[in-house]
Image (cartoon, rainbow, N blue to C red; front, side):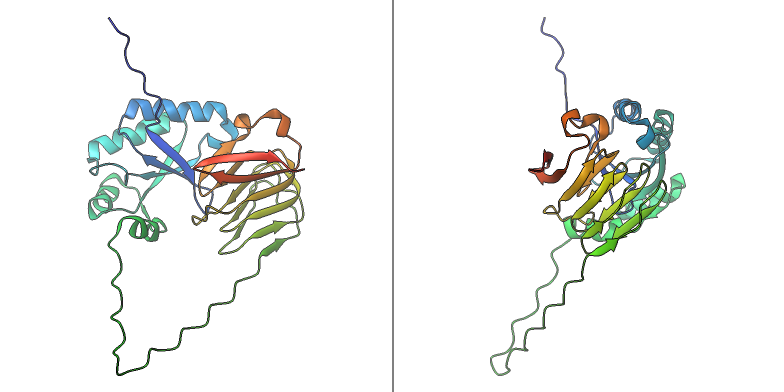
Length: 251
């Protein structure tokens, strides 16, 4: 008799958003498996994940789960060591579910949902031949990068919205450096660095002394225990390559 088939695909895809809150995208509604996956994450990086706020995202499921199933999932995740605090915006059924289980809808996910899954916006009609086409609007000037000169200590966060972030000091354990663009850190990185927070897959992280709790680009992350020890304390660059996070020492 052949052995049982083992699946190595995760039931829940965990990513980090603009404010450093984890977004758990439920891909398979297997509550026991989701609980086990989250317990493993908490055990692997307890300082990062224990009692961490988690957003539940049901957009990858074929249908919105019912109230009983969602309540069971919330209880299981709490028992695994994390705290579900909201539900990502989706369909009207998801909004109703959030109200029934007593969790808020996280409105910031609305734009992402509509951009990825919503109807294509209507195209403007071509100008009439009898009227000249309006002149193209001037391209908006690019906002300069944000410069952080003071150390970021535990519990502190800096977010460079729509631009790069340069930190000329330490990012301490428990601190967060977040940018929609790339992040350049000219001191020790002991906390978290999250680049491409609004979806820029070309964003990179550059660090002079690498001992990060977590690094992420467009939500794809690695924690300290997943990083080769030969890279710790070194100058590195981090980028996304086909949905895989790459970390290499700078020459």
